[in-house]
Image 1 (cartoon, rainbow, N blue to C red):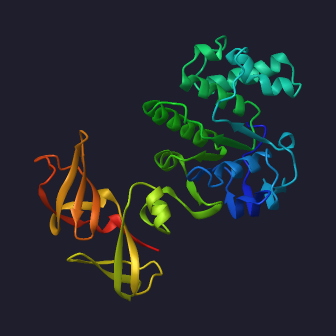
Image 2: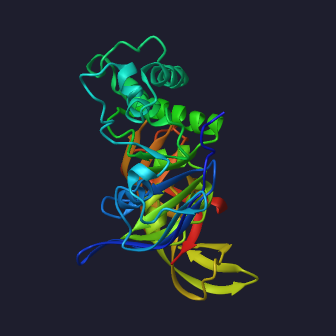
Image 3: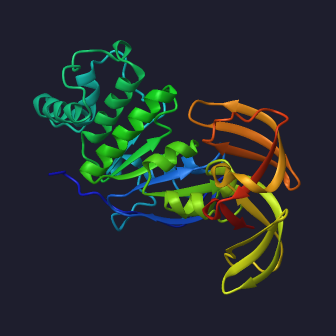
Length: 348
């Protein structure tokens, strides 16, 4: 049984200021116990500062932070039952894998035998049984990352924090390790706050995602909600590729908007919008080859199981991704496009 049960994290109108610079601006959200929530956004949006405030490495300028219902707003990091996996892993190069993993319990004064027993249990959990005597320099990037996770888990914290944990790994290894992190989180029921700027990574690991922009929350929801129903053009463009097209809503009835995309009339969820100018976020996979909107292929890239095209059309240049590779669309070829209903969302 874990020493500490997974705990919820609650931010109530939290801000963080450095002099005249506001890094986090009036942010409120809840991470439920046992949930993996990702803070996603571009560099400088406030996501890492938010994570550091959960850890107690930064003390909020305003607002309240609760962990497991307890007010920790002013508590330093040492007094919070939280562990963090840093981007650099921060392993001690002169210590073995076992010594690195046992470092936390040793500092807590639990004794060498107890600390090593706890470390061995967590190293086995992350698939590093048999690596105990190796040193960080003798490990691959993925193995070093696992040591960092084992060290963070060894004291069985209420909340586990990840700060860009996969950024030092190559693309294939990132896919494998993110799945391992997700499986570990689910099997142990851990409460996890996870920071990344990689939208694919966020979609793959998260129960919920908070998209941050300019120190504020742009939108929060499940991966599917954010991908299929982005709140605005920033979220649409940041969560996956999106073609942002200027449109006019002709009419709205029973929550459905009538919209013209070139010669094609569509009925889309109005999402609170009224007749007049708007934007449509069109996913590249939601554009089909078929009768409808005329266009000309400007660029075409064959990527094995699909083709990516840039197509010039009367409504602008569109990124189109199609699995129809035979015949292979080539630059200069005329095409006709239509739209899958689920691949388009109206945004502000």
